[in-house]
Amino acid sequence: MKKHLFTLIISALALAALAVNSTSVCASAFISGPTSVSCGTTATYFFNVTPDPNNPFRSCFPGWTIRLPNGTTIPGNGTSVTVNWGTTSGVGTVSALALCDDFSSESASISVSVGGGGSIATPSSLSGPSLVCNNEAKTITSAAVSGATSYTFTVPSGWRINGVLRTSLTTPSRSVSITAPSSGGGTIQACVRANKSGSCGTVTSGSRCRTIRYGRQNVNIVGPSVVNTNSLADWMADGVGLTNYQWRVPSQWNSFVGLNDQALIVGIDGTVGNFIVEVTAISCGVTVGNYKEVTVTRGDGGFFRKADEQSDEPFEDILTDGELNVFPNPAVDVINLSSGSRMKILTAEMVDLQGRRILFQKIENSSATLRLNAVSHGIYLLNLIMEDGSIEMRKINVGQ
Image (cartoon, rainbow, N blue to C red):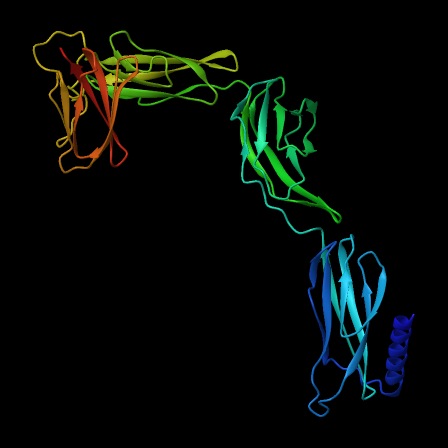
């Protein structure tokens, strides 16, 4: 009661001073304190008066009026006031009118933005499949976000989330299942946002999206259309979500690696002409295929000979480099590698003609020796990873 009576007296005296001298309210007063707060928090505000050099002992006694974003008005008095901004976001005001001991008055007011509980980070990743077949359900998972109370997942029209036909779902879980339409195909964006709910409402982050293909996919062949006789050539089956690769090449070519893999390496014989390289794969349970026309021209490869060709001459390197030496070849117990001053050899891998790894050795030097004690007699492909990232390949005859 005394508190409210004091406020009324201060207000009455201030109004009386204004009536006597309407110019006594000046801009020498100000309010200090935060102008942006989260709802549900408290903040303290101070009434300040610029010193008057003509009256250094001048004192002022403020009365406060606080208006919350929900419209509630709260009175106060004293040189400072502490405000609980409540659970409604919006804009509030802090105002003060003070009567000074020289019968003048001072006033000040500030606006305060009351936010919805701060901000929340965008999920750092959205993991999941690169391909979803028609009518197939796959799981996508958001990275955890500190402070998140739920996650909102979105997909295009025609998709299902957790088995229900809808375009969005807000859930406490970081994972949901998505199901592709029963027909068609293409590329979509599946996205997630993190949410933080509090007394003032919900704050939502930015979106993190993942590109997903759906429906049956095609297979393409990447590689040369023109190759030289007596050389090594390679092709790659390009596509998303493909399995069970099957390559078909002319029978006179020697398949080193990959008749059942995504990558194919073959030795081209000495026959010139136009040939077909074919590949099939399984996409969403259906066999898909493609082919590539390849022209073999007379070239200066000259370093490849089929394994069953008879000759008294030793096998030579498939690829040659003036400074890269692989010897002896044929080999019995060891193979010596030397790159001269060109660059370091990082790793050496030996595979058989079915593409199975037989030997692997980390080198990181310009020379090394590979011991062949555990390698059976036969024809192998030696892959050398060089310091610049390039790959050098050699055909190796062990023990023959």
